Image (cartoon, rainbow, N blue to C red; front, top):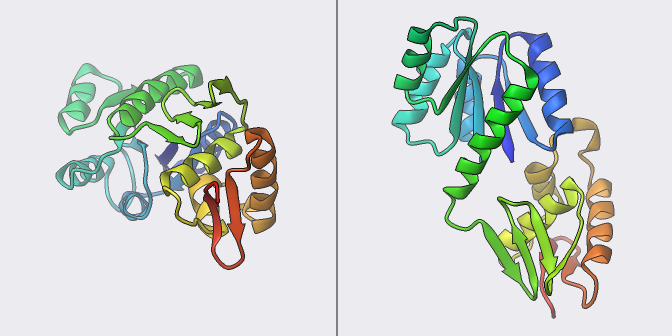
Length: 221
């Protein structure tokens, strides 16, 4: 699941981003409201964690804009003000949930899991299938011919992206954009390693094909 974290407090943003990535989330970070709108427009985000008190453009203005544009992501607003009126104002803007600072990290995770389930379940196709392989995006379960297959987070993300392409080729660069957000890991060599282990875990006959200059695809021919 991809998150957009919009927070101008650098230390807090970095700490949250690192922790959420360890939990398996893909995390993009924006430091102000204008950058948040640009980041949201450029990626397929499931949940936006949005601070209300932002420079350049307030969190309230960002939320209003996203709602007016019918942007599909769920919005969790953060604020240093935690009164009932503040919560009501945030929800009236169109936010899906509201969390007052300071908050417990475990509570943030619980809120994100709930919003993530709602975001994923609202998508038209949450189960992808091909040649006996069944991938459940919401439950994060993969099976082949009814046998469960344990995948790492990166392997799951690559398989999900390839299955969603419905037989079309996906380049290594596109896989990096979809599955990786850690700058130091964004290399084609890493993609090749993950695809290799994924092929092995999926078993025979091999389902992932590669072609120089095109990338990777799922297929049986």
